[in-house]
Length: 187
Image (cartoon, rainbow, N blue to C red; front, side, top):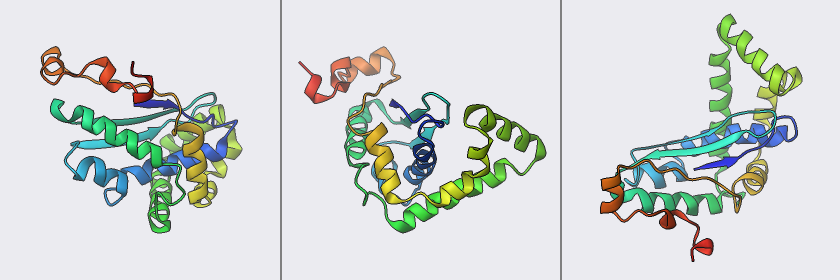
């Protein structure tokens, strides 16, 4: 499932919140991961936001068996509907996600070759100041920032869903295009 995310230049605060929220959702001890993977609905789940100048794509990807596809899709949609709740995550979960983003950034920039390409990328899409203040801005992300980001880019926002199945599996489980449409638009 993919949404249009924030422009790193026009909404840098949301872009940083997107990075933190993605890590929060992938945390194995968190609500989202438990509901998606530990429940047995999916084998794995990943959440990503790619910082871009105009629209940064947000993607939730999961792998499951054909018989669980629709249930998984519906649970993801239920979770997305609650993302804007400022109590979706605890302060400890948010702190862990912020720390994870910072550690990933430290590792990414540890080698001079990687540092140069990473700094160059952000200089091109966001400006050097964004890159230089990135870790400081990550540390400042609050639960309210996460809720604001979710309201602006996830909750009740247009999205695209892609499901990769064999024709036989699709037919066996009656997985029609209409099954994946939001209920309010289903005829």
